[in-house]
Image (cartoon, rainbow, N blue to C red; front, side, top):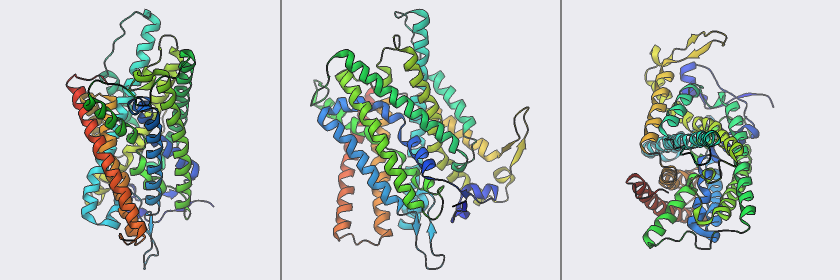
Length: 464
């Protein structure tokens, strides 16, 4: 089909700073790479622990429930990308916030804007924590190999969090989504590798045990309050495993015209099915192998002395994947803030000028001072928060539960009702609103349990 200039790019933040049109060359394969980079991330590592809290029946059903909900909500949002217009023929909503503004008005856009940025920022924090845990596990494994199995080999997280932040300062200078296809492809390959290793290690341990561990009711605890709190936190952790809704339209906006909608739906269906398969395998093999002792991060539960090379490979792949995953979730924030500043200060050289920097051996680099300063500050802030709250499971649960209903359910449903002009009292409108209400209840209880877990971890009452 060739390449096309996308409609609606005059609203693109990057265009304001470079005064160039984006050429839309994305295909179903690049879309799948972006989606899987966003989908298979930190959340997959906590699923064995989540199933352990929920038990053999409810645990797998919850994974499929969230997969189905994500698929439905994403399909609704894909339909909101283009809107018929009497004069131009179509309006393109190239980002989640633009779609909310167009369909639901500026007030909803303001509320949604805060939630979206909080969600994307929080995901960056969670990915920073996860990368640090994986890097620390590699260091611990190397220590055991050198010093022996009985060595203490105890390390903190701060150094690794800072190192990951330094890497992100550099990769954050990638201009936008259109320039990071290669990073998403590498990150996707890494996610397949470490997910496969996680499944394989769980299956191997299951064979070694000679039995399937776990129970119908999940982990047994003395306090019923604590049990329900863990169940609700597990719901939040599973919800975090499907976090890519806020970048759906940005990904769709990279695809070739005019089949963006069909291509995006096919890419989403394929990606969610692949991700759910890995989620299910990691969760179930992990729970079957460890039972009630399933760790919060599945890869920390295996013998890193006997299986050091394989565990190290998996953790190294996680770190590389999260470098790309961090960018997938940060680029929309960068584009939004920088685009707003470019429009507000259109004649300001600090905001708009591009400077060529020539380094030895390397090709000339295009540097924008606003991009350099803002993105560095952003990375420093996510790094600082990660150092304050380095609690893997609890942070994932809070973020997943808090953002699940408003971003994944409420706004896509409401925009779809407006876009298709559906009467809320018609059957389809009632069903969609009922679906939204059920998901709201799930989000509330998951958030309550996750906050309790985070408070307990911060006060030293829990090590989960």
